[in-house]
Image (cartoon, rainbow, N blue to C red; front, side):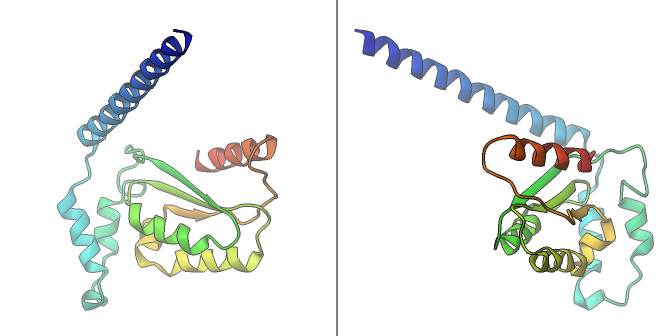
Length: 167
């Protein structure tokens, strides 16, 4: 009898949590789509200008026109992402960045746990070598790192440091 009560209570809590998560996700998606003033055709036009076929085209005026941080100072970024990783994960972080990249978002890449400066420099050079990241200027790499444990004050400190940098 006691086990049945605990099981039903656990199911109820899981159902409520899942419902809240789905509702919040849908709400954020709807608000994002309604508030977005970024034209997809303009975005495709800029991306096509970055291809090798059009490398001689001057895209500086187009980029200034649609880049919200420079062209329209009133438009805030949609989201701010903090990507963090440990030793040997810089290539994964860069691949993830390329997969989710959008010009109106802000990105902060942070290698934790006292990784070697060489890997951090490789990550920074990789970010700078991408034309789209350079053009919009919304991808940053944390230059200095410190040792972080998975739990405890150091993990919280790393998250607060990243939040301060993104603000």
